[in-house]
Length: 254
Image (tube, rainbow, N blue to C red):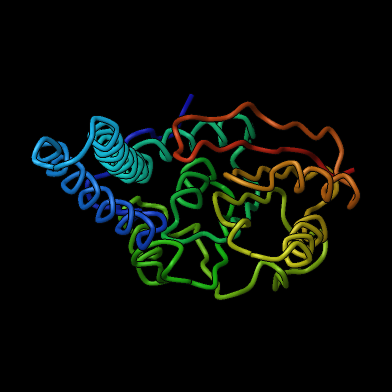
């Protein structure tokens, strides 16, 4: 059973990729307006029937492209506000937490996954780690993450740290579960992502679980997890609650 599918009125988990969403909306509205205006003025163009047909096709192409960009931006907003909460709960449901684990969330942002885990850990700890990059999430700050912990009533079991997932500041074999949601792909080079995967395996206790949700590189993560010693690796089907759609890779450490 999900701990919480509906966001509380006080907690705010922000908008993913705010710059991209802004650009999609602006470009979409602009192209849609230009396309519609062009469609209404095609008949005023002097030229052959072939020119008229080409102008009409181009106008509709611009309008449809604008509508596509606009819908994409709106879907990303819906995903940030609603879809990712449901996707989070599905991920946590599948971990079958007992309530006394130490869970580490990498790239925790405003704490969506971290707080969801903390609600399921009445006797455990939820640790969040992030570099707080604003381009990845609007209002991506440690103080906002902790404010969400307070709002969700889990501040007593949440710890939030500054740090890079490529060099996790925790000891070997020190956590029971490692999660990451839509964060590892923000490392733009292959070696950096591999380093993050190796760090995940390093800090996991024997028998510990990993669950990584992302929109890109999932099969790469699965391969690197396997090489690093993770077993029982499973890649989920695409989850359309997230936009762009995401997959989850899971596994356990021997």
